[in-house]
Image 1 (spheres, one colour):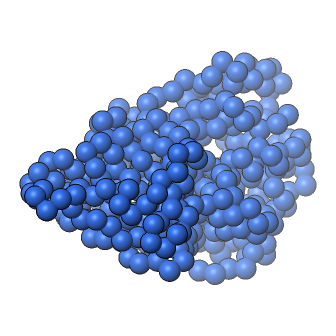
Image 2 (image 1 turned 90 degrees about the vertical axis):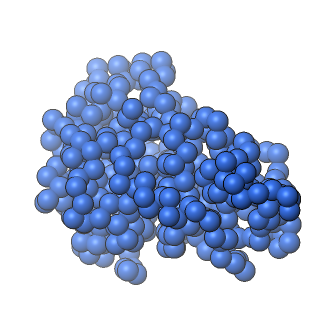
Image 3 (image 1 turned 180 degrees about the vertical axis):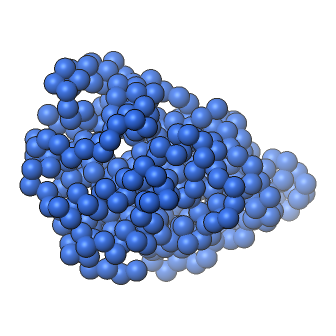
Length: 386
């Protein structure tokens, strides 16, 4: 059986380096506003609950008849790229007042025309419910970049978009997409990013999955190590991603050893060590931890998601499954972690132990991202660079 390409399920949200880059322009009232809003628990702001497609439902029924190894449908990402730099126009005209700009542009607090600095190509690279990604060219440097344009009229909570931009503007790590510029006009917010050409990890899983698994252990460990480094950096800075999945992991290029980048911070938020647990169960069903489903969780939910990704990379299918989001969540809550079937015949004991340490249902016993980086399976299959 193959990893399905066309069957898609949306994220459930309950109701790189840049050549010759310059730093992003300041965002006026953005930082102050976001810091005040971070303590409020979020509602959905750019995704709708989605039912599985008929094709996937039929596939699930067939697989349950065979009693094992259901496969994972793709979830739809709102963004697919990462970052670069530019200069930008602060005001559309000298007569525009600050108050008018803030009313017109509530996310950044200032009006800026992206076309002043970038030529935006017409071809769409990626598309979500509320945004599209296109290639763009910086007029001054001729750099080829990417721009995600988000339709503000389709977003219920602009403060959550504001928070996403704030977090991206303040995260700097080689394994995480780095936003270096942002433009807002009357209708759209445009996030300028690097253009990654290697595609999604999801597509690589689809292409490489066979009856006996997906990636070899060395390649899987390389991807997971890079992902853990990115997660460790976020957690060190009190940021939780909350939507780690193969669709949100991009390869920088098509080279065999290309680096991976963690993208899409639409559900990310700050959460300090001694803060009250988060309670809103957001994310994508396959990757949501048991404690997150219970509505009382912390940053360890990201480590669980990495463990699910690692399991899929080695076996080609997820450890907890079902024909609907609710069935997947029930499986996550109730079913024990198993390593059965052809996907695990040739896998090492260290690989099994590594995943077990990340998928402990008690978050107090689960490895942290830093601890996971020191596991023998990672150390023996990669070169550690913390």
